[in-house]
Length: 245
Image (spheres, rainbow, N blue to C red):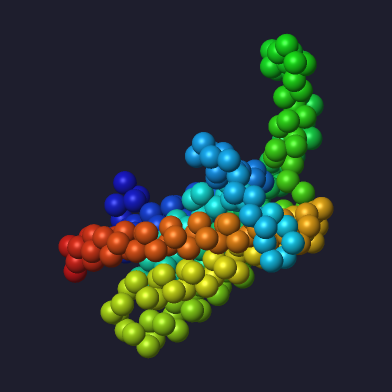
């Protein structure tokens, strides 16, 4: 098999890139949905008054659900393949995301089959094609915000990671991984929502701040909780690569 001709290091890069790419595209697609964390857990919204004059509820984008995985894998790739490896997967993934949006948009333009509309109409005269288009036809703002935030945050993550590693060496994995992730995800959380829903959309500044803050807090705690996973991943990767040497 062709795959057997690859070295373990090459196979590792392909595997990590696959995880990175899959989670990035999924997060971008489902990111259009804004979810209520309180209601999802069976509680009433907090409805706390903020210093910027709006009420704060735990609302965030569904895309935040698996986004921390993207940054964690990015840090692992940075550790083993350097800044060039991160840049390669970042720009390549951005291209695939843009391609995905183009294909999805073209799919919304296709004329639906009559029987598909009829079988899904139900008693409420539900228009499944309109729902399909509204969900998947993400506007220019969301596409622009997503790609811009993705590239800026990834580049920032790689630079911060490299700076910390240059000072700490191979030790303190938690510091360079968690530290770079917390800063880069702050940029990502506010930039994507600001461009997509405030600059190009009709959200208020309060809604932008609230959802962005919730996205970041979620990513913040997940990044900290996933710190042990980084050490486990490094352990098994080292064992995997050692077998080839």
